[in-house]
Image (cartoon, rainbow, N blue to C red; front, side):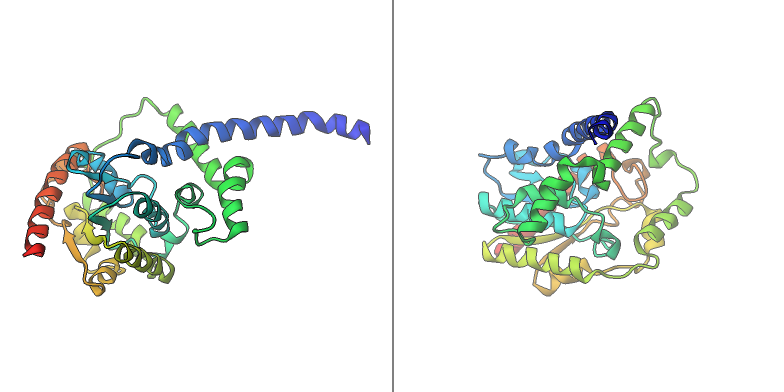
Length: 296
């Protein structure tokens, strides 16, 4: 038996070393940045927060001086947003929350496209919706046992590929050919053979109820799209905006504002850095107009 363990030891040490390496890399790339905003705005007075999936990332923190903080990073589903919202409502006094209600966000594929292992750090076990055992598994096992965590593995492999391809320059949307084809392909990814997720719709309903309980206004927002994507999408919509409207929430629809500005996009449905800066000005102008009309 002793001889067997002696032979097995190098293998186990190798597995342990790989696990430590992957965990170390992923912690720096994913878990630590995920909660960085908590520390950065700990004592800051907020008027509101922006919650979105990757469509909100180009805004960066351009509205921070206005008292509006963008907490969109790593919020690929309403479940992630719900966890974050629970923290911000508990620790900050706010006037409003701006929530993305783009047409694809209630698609059922988003149920698994989430960052629960990380967004769980915004809630404690007692107040979370997961229970002790699931909370422990998600927060600790999936984070520190990287070799059995598909999320950690994928992040590590993506970082490795990115490092190997660091000399490649990404082509902007304005430079791409076959825009109509790419728009249809992207729309197919978001809508074809998919259905509305009742689970995510319930998460969105819960977010609205949480805000109402704290006397915080909920404002929906649809992000700008390229003409190729908007045309291909047509009337496809899983109805996140309707969930908000049912509760009397206003929705700011910016889908068509940049249809003739391909230069402001990085791909079919994401703004580039310049687009993010220009869009941030539109948000503040529309918020000011909306809140003035709302108070009259």
